[in-house]
Length: 205
Image (cartoon, rainbow, N blue to C red):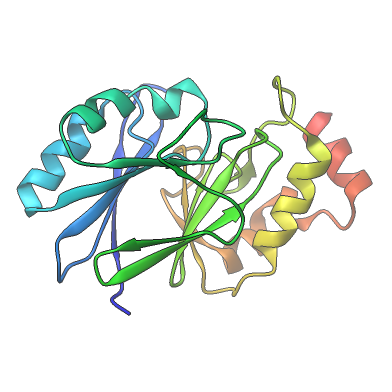
């Protein structure tokens, strides 16, 4: 299995990150959460000679999906998302889904809480976490469709992954653009909560 490369792209005045994920052997790729500046993904793909085959959304909030139409209009990409957030995607995602990107693969974890259809994308030790987990923080749970209890259990699912897992968040909200799960376990108060009750108190307080 080929290790996919991940390019992190600042994509809005709201500190969004977009991602270009691609196979270095076949130069087939996926655009993730094109946000407000989808042209930056298209420019990077063109610079590298990458053909965008998939458009992936971590969830359905407008600051992440606003650039979808431009990506779809300028590529042969199929839209892959969880149907709880994005109606009628070309590829409906669920927990355990797998997506082929050239000689590499992306696995899908359903992580509801921030939104009902939030998903994160795993490739090897790399994890694109959308608004479920940020560096030093986690997503909001007070928005329409949010569920703080589900968010807690989604974070526990992430917490069980290897400490070497590298976190690529949906926003630049932390002290660094990326981190490792080991770092998050030491420094992220939301991951350090010992039980659901303490998490709810911290997240909703």
